[in-house]
View 1 (spheres, rainbow, N blue to C red):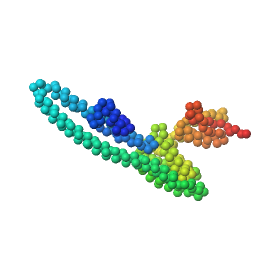
View 2: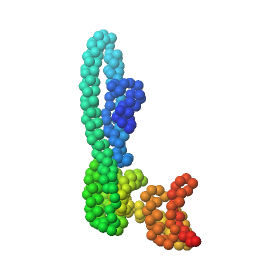
View 3: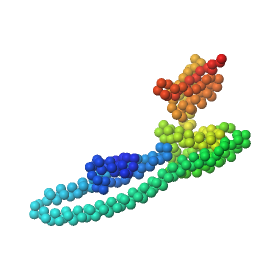
View 4: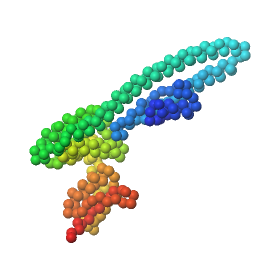
Length: 293
């Protein structure tokens, strides 16, 4: 059997029928993995099947019958006709079973995708339901942290991941610390942190719009590990600033760029620290003296 991957089960079957030059109903296949669109790339899966044409088994039967003695030709023909009838009956039963199975699988997939789409609707609903940012002077950070924690747990329960910890507390007067952990926490981070960035962006837009606060999002130990790595990476840059009064980093991407900017501004509060773009559109950080007029 040949393994085939595609965006949907239908596309996988069409690819298989083209490869074997036969109709879809003439395929014998097994579903290895059902497809899933996921949410912002989280949990996205391709459809995977193993397939072969049903004619292979029929051709084998014909080949075996031809190799028998001439005196048995009529008996073999009768047996072959009977075998064809049985095969056709089995094919019809198999096709009906597959149709019913696909119907059930489609219902399950629709249910899972609906849950994931609901998570996006949840964010939109939370943001649109608040027309004004609460007064900063009367803000209760601990009360807000509890409220965000309850709503964030409700949101994450819509995603198909096993998460054991969702915790929110005040980090400083302008920031909420959010900790998410669990068996599937790595799936929320993604390759090179691209899922982490998407989730962080969504939560920030919600919390900042409703409460006027910043967030510090920690999923497993991702943020702490990134901060430690950047701190070590910036050591030569910091030494150059201390020696020559200025320096610049190599191009940095996404979360790493913002972590580096924060650390350098804390290290040199009296210096001008900002992003710049190179000719390839990549971001790097420059550290220099302020220009006074």
